[in-house]
Length: 222
Length: 191
Image (cartoon, rainbow over all chains, first blue to last red; front, side):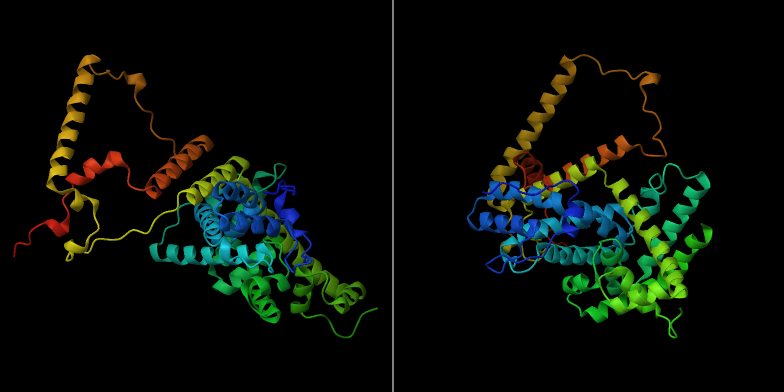
C-alpha cells in the first residue's frame, strides 16, 4: 500500500486547486483520484483493513467540502450529516465501479448531490425539520466584531437566503449550490451533473435571479 | 469611454462564476463603469452569501464533529447493513426466521434463561442492601431549554451507538427475548 503523499489539512482548498492532469495511462492524476484508485485496488485484492485505512484519508480530503455543499443544499445540519455519511458509504460500497479516467471528486459530488436530493424528498414526505440551519448555527452567523444588530440582521438574511434556496427546483438548487458554495465553475458542474454547460448557465442565472430579492436585503442593509 | 451596448446580467454572472471565461466581457467591464458597478453589486451580495454560509457550515461541522462523522462512516463501512427480509404474515412456512428453526424446545430454554436473569438481579439487589434513597439535591434538574455543546456531543454519540447497534447482526443476548415474542404469522386466525 502506498503511503499518503497528500496534505490532508485544508483539503477543500487542495482539491479546488488540484490540477486535473492525466497520467500516462489516461488516469486522472489528482490526489483524491490516486487515493480512490488505491482503495479500488485494495478492495479488489480483498485487503479490506488496508482499504478502510486508505478510505479514512479519502474521507478527510472531501469531508469539509461535502458538509458545506450538503448543508447549503439541505439547509439542515442533521440531514446534511446523514447525506454526507450516506454518500461516503455509497462510495466505498461501489468503489470497484469507479472509472479511473474520470476525476474522483466528480463521481463523489454526483453521489453526494443524489443523496441530498433523496434526503430532501424523504424529508418533504415526512415533513421532518429537526435542526433548521438558522437554529443550528445561531451562534456562528456573524463575525465576532459585528454588533448584535448586525449579527441579528445576518441571521435573518441567512434564513431568508436559505429559505429561498430551499424553494428552488432540484436542478437549479444543485447548480447554484455547487457553483456558489462548492467552488465549481459552470463547466465543472456540467460534468458532475451530466448537463450541457449552456444548460448549467441557464439554471444558474435563473437561480440567482430568484434569489436576488433575498440577496438584495443584505446589500441594502449594509 | 463608454461602450454603446452594456453587458447582460447573464454574462456578468457567468464571468463571476468563471473568471477565466469571456475575455471580451472582462475588457468591457474594464471600460464601462456602469457595468462594473453592476458586477460589483452582484459580486458583493454573492460573496457575502458565500462567506456567511460557509462560515455557518464550518462552525457547525467543527473538527470534533467531523472526527465523529468520519468514525461513524468507517464503522458503517466496516459493518455493512445486511438486507432485511420482512416476514409476510400469510406465508409462515417460507419465513427464514431463526426462531422457527429453534422450535419450542428453545423457547423453554429462553424462558428459563430470562427467569434465571430475573432471579439473579433480584438476589443482587437484596445482597447490596436497600435501594438508594434519592435526596432532594440528587434529583435531576429540569433539562435546559438550550442544549449545550457537550450535551449535543453526547446526544450525537448516543445516536451513533444506537445506529451502529441497529446495523449489527442480531446479537446473541437478545435472541432469548426475541424468542418469547409472538409472531403474527404463528398465531391462529380466529374468525
